Length: 209
Image (cartoon, rainbow, N blue to C red; front, side):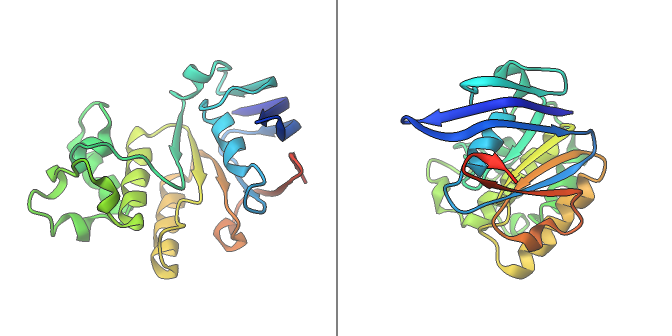
């Protein structure tokens, strides 16, 4: 499902990823740990088609061009980008409207109790000041968005970093329930978030160990 062959990536003349090779089969759950700034998020963005490797190849579900890879994956970044639209539009992002699926992902992302308190509920307009939402609310919207896209590959960058311990466990359990038959790559610095994963790597000095 995901193949990285001899991939390198640098930023400002600093090598971030160095000759990295990784093969991930369909349905595998892969955890990647490492210190802050080690390149975990960069590696995830390469898999998401958000960055192009300096050399080597990144292939996801048979696609190697970044713009085509991005259509094949669902991504939850640590600092999600929300648009000045309704919560509904931030979740569906132009994909075909399926009311039952919207309701399902809102529940799975643990958004229901908050959304039900809003004046227009799921149609509540976030506006130009989406940063006024709590970090947890923004992350849950991003998680619901990734679930709604329903790609075969789910890429997670610290998806529960803005949640307290109880809520993070609840949301991560929901993600794994949703992604039971999907390919998952989860980067985090907390090993407890990777319980039950098939393989766990440590990224250090640009390589996986």
